[in-house]
Image 1 (cartoon, rainbow, N blue to C red):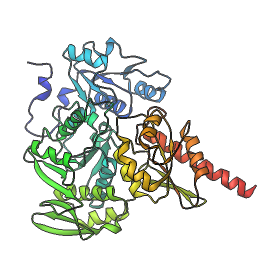
Image 2 (cartoon, rainbow, N blue to C red):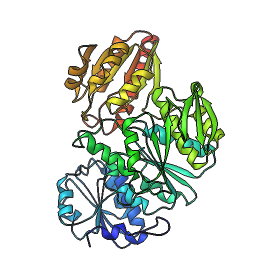
Image 3 (cartoon, rainbow, N blue to C red):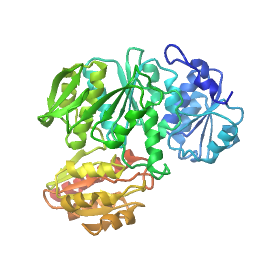
Image 4 (cartoon, rainbow, N blue to C red):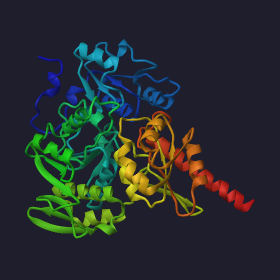
Amino acid sequence: MDAGQDLRLIHESGNMRKDRIAGKKISVLGMARSGVACAELLKKTSAEVFVSDIKSQETLSDQTQRLEEMGIQFETGAHTSRVLSGKDFIVVSPGIPPDAPILRQAQDMGIPILSEIEVAFWLTDAKIIGITGSNGKTTTVTLLGEMLKQDGKQHRVAGNVGVPFSSVVEEVSADGYLVLELSSFQLERIEEFRPHVASVLNVTPDHLDRHPNFKSYLEAKLRIVENQTKDDFVVLNADEENSLKLAQYARSTKVYFSTRSEVGRGAFVRQQKVCLRRNGDDKEIIEASRIGIKGPHNLYNACAACAVCGILGISPDSMQRALLNFKGVEHRLEAVKTLSGVRFVNDSKATNVESVWYALQSVSPPIILIAGGKDKGGDFSKLRELVDENVKTLILIGEARQKIRDALGAVVRTLEAENLQQAVRLAFDKATQGDTVLLSPGCASFDMFKDYEHRGRVFKETVAALSSDEDSEING
């Protein structure tokens, strides 16, 4: 019997597996949101929990204070042998790379390594809706939550969206829905995790600083369907080749969405209207022009959400109300302010090249683009045509500055800044009335910020400071 076999027993009804946790000795690696939330959930389920993080205690003061309040043991500054000694399994945070030395030691010792979403899945009988893809995940899961809310359904939105699965798993009954945003990192360490409805929005090159190649990244996304059965559903992008590739691996029922052509079952755009086809019956949901979130990518997200809700039996009226009223998510093409006729747009969540490609088609030119950060292996040359057409000035920050300059510097005036605050001020200085200053980095944030949210907040705070400076000049 292999070390993880007891974690893969078949359960005939429901997902509740508290017996796998109660009385067990479990290590949690990483004190990010999901790590602390998972540690708390394990503690409440009568496990003996130990949490470890390589960051300093000073950096993690808020997290360690919470662990102390919960009576959970922890260490900071390094992963020591305490992580491994006598442990039944390890829960790893998605930010820890799979080749980390402590994980290699655990594998050599035969200690099972699981993701937070796998463990949280053991503790719910709610219906799981899992959304993955390279772009659009956060917008789509949040929009799904709004549609469920409009229909009066019990639900929570969690996962990679910023709310850990573990923190909400006890809040939704078997009649409710848990809508999860799932990254490739979270899917790497699942065993039985099984969404009733899965959706793969798109798969374009991303996280190539973590995955050895695109094939590995695609295979990680594929894991979302590996445990599904014929009683489950997968919603795929009919317009995107890599999403369609996953259809051959899924045992579940296939449903599609498209903005280019009609689909046999799912959601599509016909004569500038979003339509839903289920059981051979077509329903018009909304005119595309009336959708609250703009841009070609958001039309895809709207169709994906409608296709999922069609499976769940959500009424077309509820879908329409949500699409009319939903204005998008923070840090994703977020209109911040207009100063002296210059618009500022926060797209800090654009952490890959494909996201920038959509952003450049979604805001009004002329654009002053602020880009850069920690490179994830993206090909910025794909942006050349759009940059040439829509961008008047490119301002670069972070570790990827030279790579982006090499790819795009020949087609647009290119400047550099030492930090984001300087980049915002430089952009405003170079802007004229009618321009859009767009933060759409195309990179991860970890070279300069805690995360993309921190980066977005700094952008907005700097814009607010510009506004204060302007007011002072006017009143001075």
